[in-house]
Length: 329
Image 1 (spheres, rainbow, N blue to C red):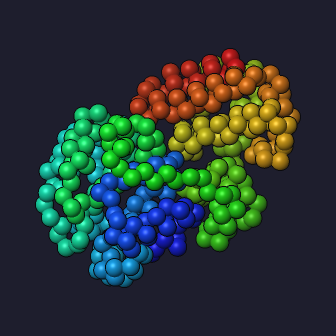
Image 2 (image 1 turned 180 degrees about the vertical axis):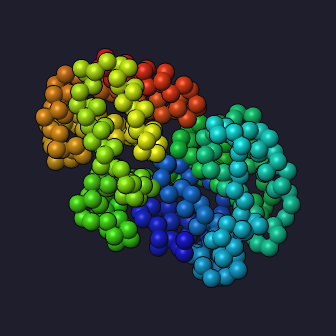
């Protein structure tokens, strides 16, 4: 990681960061909000590197001692908050790694920076502990909270942070990156960009996946015939994706795109923007069967399923509830 030039898209956020550094108007707390794979961690790390860089420029030089330490993950004044429990960040995590440490002055840099990945997982008690620090931070402290859903944070925390929202990147930029940086063939880059829906991290993951086409085809077969399948057959089919070592949320994203296509076709009859344009016969059939309200319910139920899986709710139960909703609508 050498600089902001390596970031695909997010020019508005990069400009904001560079202006804040140049004008010495750096806030004590930021929320970087965006989907998994959207680039939150990369932007937070580059922001931190820029603040600590010995060049004093609005772009990390990549060559000074501070930048070398940051790139290696060993900078003493850039701290990533870890958590042992997979589904939550506890009050003890915040007290020991932040509250108990933040009053110690930076070891060798102008700032002491804390990066909190998956800040959505902060418990209410952890958020209240964090709030005390955000309300009265030492002048050298900067905190980055990385979230997929900023609404999961308390309003009192959101009101005290600068919100940086990572938006979807244009498909042509995603495709260009895949072709130039990863040497992906044109047709494959088109496919990955379409499925990524503006998310560069997901596009890279799909481009590097040995099994993406197999996964896509299995998902299509499931979605084409789901109305005729028994519920236990559907759940068994979903369990099969484990052999590809793909996260279930990524598989659910493919299902989301299918139903968005159905909704888009139902509303506009336009086939130009469909990701699953080669499955138009089945998209038309589903659009004719389902109401707008039913399709919205399906899309909402997929998002609920993702949240339940993140909270470690029983897999079979979550999938059964989801596909009951799909079959009913």
